[in-house]
Amino acid sequence: MMHTTNYFNTFIQIAEDCPVTTGDIPPLKVDSKTVANLQFEMIAHHPYQFTSDDVVFGVYATKNNIAKKDLNAEREKFFSKGQPCLRSSPLAKRYGWGFHHNADGKVALFAVDSKQYKKFKNDASVKQTKAMRSKKA
Image: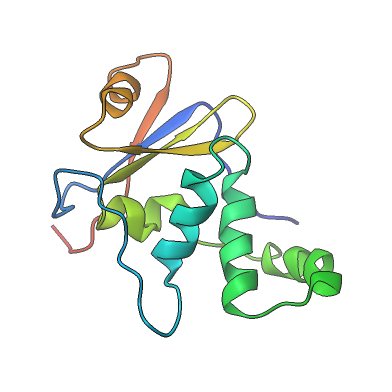
């Protein structure tokens, strides 16, 4: 059985305990890119081009230096068990970014202080969910 992290016609709001009130671009580390950097680059530079599964696996493949020829087999193995979805992303938990998934499951990022974020948050036709909290309530 294949698992998925994809959402459809859904808006993931920032976590209740997100420490920022603007969409902050994750800072780059000197030696390597973080999960937040990789997710941000993939989604912000290519809105509505990738599904959540594409992003989650793409970051995993990059972090683990998976060869291009092995991507299909590794993706199948990766999704043979459940994986954390974008609700657990540092972008939504720490950096102030919401995720909109369109009807095709393709995802785009919106800063918490943007008009589009407010529009999606108040759109009753879009399913609403929140990013996971960093700390227990």
